[in-house]
Image (tube, rainbow, N blue to C red):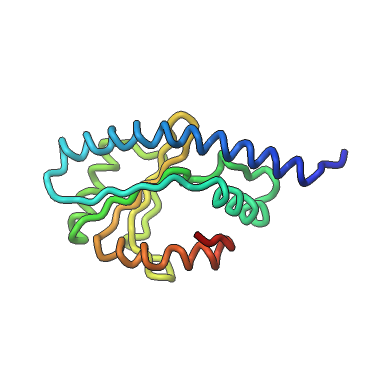
Length: 165
């Protein structure tokens, strides 16, 4: 059986659009849950930002991941359709906030780039969740790291995924 790549692209595009539309709904639900939890248990200042991955960026990541993992990789495998960044003043506060997230929000997975930063210098704890079929990532970092990440993120996406803003 021959599979037309245009049909596969159309299926992926449709899946990404459906997930993107659902993400708009789930983002608000998760943000309210997160903010309420933090207001109750974390009495220090923090900054919370979020983004919903665009359909274009989802498609770019899927194409890249299929080269690595095979054709079965799809939109449902993307770990960060919704991305939250929680930033605080100090590294001690990153640890404190990370402990709260682990204990009270029950992430499905944690990636520790805080103790062992990436080769590029990225230093944060990453937590993963799934809410009604939408994969969510929370990055916990210092304000200084958030500044650096914001400054270098577009270049990273361009180099890694061939995607520009």
